[in-house]
Length: 358
Image (cartoon, rainbow, N blue to C red; front, side, top):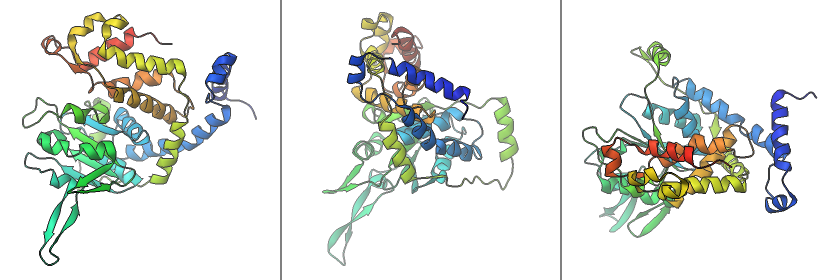
């Protein structure tokens, strides 16, 4: 069977991996093999089907769709920020339609209570006892719409479920269904009627996406497909929970070289001590750097990105491509940064420029 250019490129990469010294080979027993590459490429075929199905409803927004799939693969919650009308809610609803999974939506408002999210105990006079009424958090995909329009106590009600995949109601703890994913939307914090998310909850989101306006061509397509009174957005299921679980197991086996692990850790450490990495000018702009949870999230998201590309190993570009989305909400900027109009994105981009790639 003749080799294609793609096959030759993969073979070259495998040869590079196999040219390690004997010590490195003994140290890295999980280095990728050609058969792993083929297996992952076959198992990742559903990703393109999912993209196409979502594309029947969502015009453009490739960045948004790909990051939602990465969150799904890496078992990480996703926060979407953007002005109203950019299809954030529609994208999440469409993803749920494309999966054979249970979906629920909570519209966060200023008068929402924690019990409206997780559930409560209800007294039954006939039985003379309390019964548990489970809230909408008991689902596979939870859409927390406009999450920053509710007070902090309601936002914090999600914390246990997001981190532990369980919820405590009264003195009883209930496990959440699997898979469980929170996909939250928020409006920019300078808009009227919004509350800032607590740092502890922000850190629970693996990715924070900044959703931007479509370009002219995309907006013309949106106009053609939506400027109808009776427009309906329907998508068909193309993937089930079993396939997602199977893909997650494969992601755990994706190879992350020791040098890339060091690079990944250096990037996160540079957000805490930029002067040690030749970026001392950033010290005044950073109030708090990224936590160890950011290191774990960056590794998982990079592996998920490699899986989506049909690769059995992570490249430095995978880390760079996903780094902004993993770190932007975890690097807390100082008052000096706000005064000089320096954002966390600016800081992270500078760090990626400064930290040497192995």
